[in-house]
Amino acid sequence: MNVNSCRVGLLLIALVLGIQAGEPRNLSVLKAEIVAYVDSGEYEAGVKAAVAPALEFLAERVARKAAGERLAVVLDIDETALSNLPHMRAFDFGYVPPEWDAWVAKGEAPTIAPVLAFFQAARRAGVEVIFITGRKESDRPGTEKNLRAAGFGDYAALLLKPNGARITTEKFKTETRRKLQAEGRVIIANVGDQESDLAGGFSERTFKVPGPFYQTQ
Image (tube, rainbow, N blue to C red):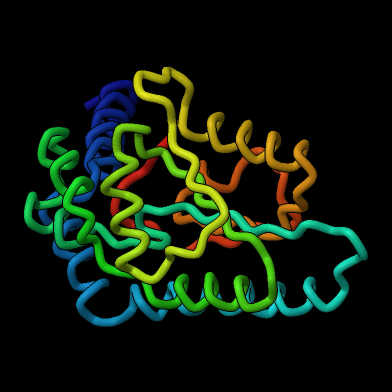
């Protein structure tokens, strides 16, 4: 075999190895890892760890509140304040729009306890809590029912995407925070499970809780 043939052979081997190395992990394995992550308690521990600095910052920021400041915090809903794990597990982490709509309408998603503790601390301190969510306006009845049942009833506003809106969730949330600040509120903290919940500014601090289940834009 000549040198050129050796080079071609080595190149082919490298290409094959590169393809194999770049193959994604099997979806079933990833799902099993997520279930184990939740069932082990690691997910809940991660949420607690993410909320702890938010609680510390809340107390510190309230202590130095300036006269006349209207302080507020922003919370996402899905996988931040409320857990949709029962629904996701029932559908093997798939998304079936009619079934999702029915789940939201029931208003039975359980509370994510560390975020509820943050909500309660904010309200005790006189800080407004505003929910900004990618849920549709048509989801309002079920969402309001669920928030009340989960202990989040004492909120200042629930802001949902208009039905049929073509804007991304990230842009909707950013623009909504901008409007809230223009109205005179000082958003001191923004808590969510997605990077899209937190991007775009209009908050003094952002706090991300674990979000391994899906990704929104």
